[in-house]
Length: 162
Image 1 (cartoon, rainbow, N blue to C red):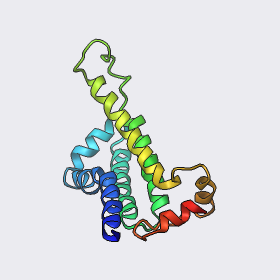
Image 2 (cartoon, rainbow, N blue to C red):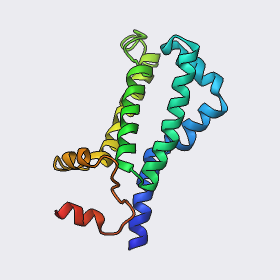
Image 3 (cartoon, rainbow, N blue to C red):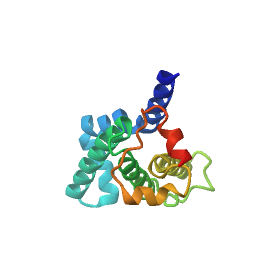
Image 4 (tube, helix red, strand yellow):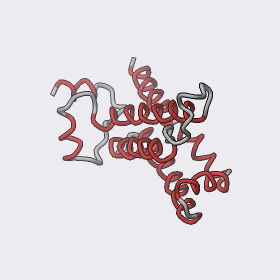
């Protein structure tokens, strides 16, 4: 049963980060020019756009590895949650195209669903950060780099009983 518990914990975390590591990070690496061009629309300057892509790629790789390995996973999950919220607000602006109500297959509808998917993903990362009860919020701020020890059998049961 212990192996199954570990496999489930790893699988859930892998599902949360799979969008970023490997897919989005590799896309930024292999198509850096395309990613920068897309970011330039919102950033304005090519240099700022390139810097944002590099920062985003680093967040996607290193924070995803933190969530997967359990090393400072709560802080890593918080950074990924904030990243998801920021990318939703900056790059999934469904209110801008103006075709939400007039075109059922318009750009605004696609952006609308992407916006909410980003926010839902942020919620998943916040569950790793803060857990499922309000009592864990002060614990996070007291020890923000602490691990949830996702692959320790019984750790979740023991911490929930405290």
